[in-house]
Length: 426
Ligand SMILES: [Zn+2]
Image (cartoon, rainbow, N blue to C red; front, side, top):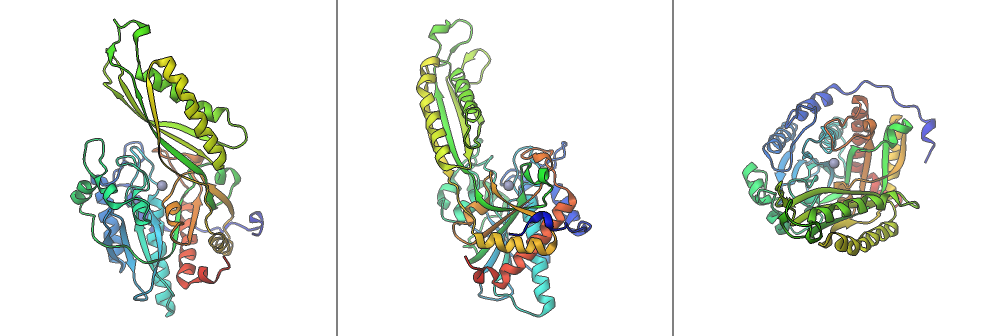
């Protein structure tokens, strides 16, 4: 790769139509704090899906839904040819930001439409068609696990398992999707290549003044469901020695999870206990059971495995100290996995031609592209996040970066449609 510092950054005004559409999209599920709350298959998700459906249809795409609610907008230019697929997710975390996922879907819609219009105007036919995708339930907050739609599409999660998953109120994915009407029997397009753009959700690009991150591999992640079982008793009258306080045991585990990160030296390790439910959660009752979600991530697989082992080793001591039992089960995870180098090169050349500074980077967060790269040549790109804020109403990206990222995605989609990746040395 050439030195990105040697490449001048393009001076252009942001695309007004794109920003206008982003403002419209950001109104669905808008919160008073400037963010959005549109968890999977809620009313706000239904509104934005309907809006995207109309947007795509108005520009000549055919919109179809598969059995887990993935929304596809098919621009068919060469009947019978496979599709370049580009997209991300519109669903958000509770009190989430406007950009996470939604930017990628909107950028993909604009990029696909622009690329199709270009081919139309030039009178040349591409090798591949293009389709926009809005993956169902990437965030995994209302329904677990995260990246549900792309996991089903890539054969990693059986559709029946996904559809039977319930939210905390007991509503199944299937019932929720039927209620909002975005479930169908489309098998999905034959995918020639996949491209996704997303906000970085970190500080590296901003700190270095670089516009584009080209993702060359993923951090590894392991996620655990933890159940701490004690015994319900009176908070006042039960003598301390008799207590089997599940919340105390859980608290020791929360600290142990944090200490894994604090004590790690060789590689970065990000650890969290991110969700907790307490039974019976009553003011005068010692908790009998606590359920928690533990999330461990590192750029090194062996280091992550060692951290998971250290966590397991801390369990007997916690059980003894709090007189509880702890069940620690890994529910899912992924390894350090590369994105194809040919795709990184293709995107790097496109960025250079647009005068956009760029650097290679790993993705710490999971994305639908992490699933897609296992079934199709995939390209993942980042634009800067202001102060790295994410999964927060204060999430932000500069308008110019929004626009430049969409310009880059347009170039990448255009090249993928031409079959450029097929001839790129792998
Ligand atoms: Zn996302």
